Amino acid sequence: MSGPRLSLSDMARRVARDIPSGAYVNLGIGMPTLVGEVVSPEKEIVYHSENGILGMGPAPAPGEGDPELINAGKQPVTLLPGGSYFHHTDSFMMMRGGHIDVTVLGGFQVSEKGDLANWATDEVGHPPAVGGAMDLAVGAKRVLVLMTHTTKAGTPKILPLCTYPLTAAGVVDRIYTELAVIDVVAGGLVVRELVSGLSREELQARTGARLAFADDVAELVPGTV
Amino acid sequence: MIDKRVGSLVEAVAGIEDGATVLVGGFGNSGIPVELVHALLDEGARDLTLVTNNAGSGETDVAALIREHRVRKIICSYPRSSGSIWFEERYRAGELELELVPQGTLSERMRAAGAGLGGFFTPAGADSLLAEGKEVRMINGRRHVFEEPLHGDVALIKARSADRWGNLVYSTAARNFGPTMATAATVTVVQVREFVELGDLDPECIVTPGIFVDRVVRVAGS
Image (cartoon, rainbow over all chains, first blue to last red; front, side):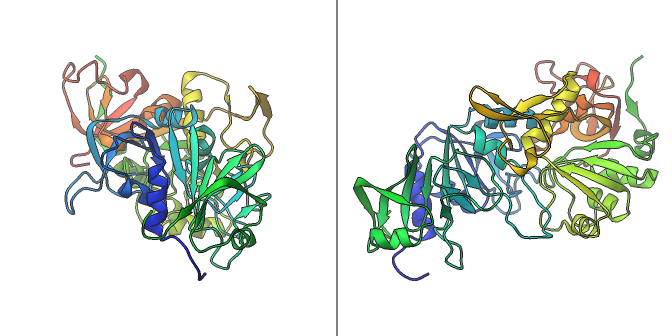
């Protein structure tokens, strides 16, 4: 889609700003993984991986590292000093039990009530897979969704109700897209930040659910986020 | 004298019967007891129910069991991955039943079995299709779905080191489902990289106490 928009790295940097130092964080597979690459190095963040890692570090140098030390996306990673390994049941206790401060997840659809659909579409004959998405969505203290504002075809992904199967109901706190930062509050959706050059009407036109606008909507300037 | 060490992979998987429910450790390619699964393939048991996080990829281990028509049903959280061709082939052909379970629920159901519990209520999946046909209860204002324990006839897992009592330590993220699966099966079979003498493993650091382990087999370099 043409018009003003944030780049993927702008979007990741915008999410990263909202992750406080000292947080225990789980980044979902795909776009959310980018957030870890742009968090300010001054912040001390402990990354959790569902397969039993706290204090996960970056990928090892090519040809180095332990082939069994992988992240949830099955990519090789390292362990930082202070990091730990634990088994799956403990790992999901951390996730489901409210011990993870922030999770950043991808989304197929988010509803105005904060319902999240990110594990299955309505594609027939495609075998389903869920992984840890449901446990994380219900358990993390703060659920941030990083996704494109619409599908490639231009169909809105922020809707009054999700049409795809739900991952969890009423769990999303904030949505970050290439066009806006939107909070899910008790009364619905509130736009906090809007990409420069896009009007409120244009944003609403690309959104299925009704949007309210904060009194002090901030400007998201591409390339300076 | 207690000695859970066995001398061969053949002995390690001996007696696994047709129709057995087999818990197989591993997450992606991390912690898969590859040699034990191949020994099970050679042993020949059919009509198996596999409980495992992923449904195999390429031509080895779980994928090979599926390819050779040994698996009737798979209980897992993430069957689809790059290279899961045999799962997709048999699933689409209607030959392989899939029970999809959220990953934390999969692990906790086995924990419940190992802990002698009759199940648990979890919010994970309570608002999803995966709760269909299950009891849903409001607990502290939130929907929770009832999940039953998941017990295995056999668990096949991988650890780093074992002593003759079956005490285990693991290697990095290859630990994943191993400690939970070890508690949840009638017979727990472990492949390890090395055997150590009784007393060599630091008691403060033993991850799986030998009470949960029945057979250990050494697979050098694994």
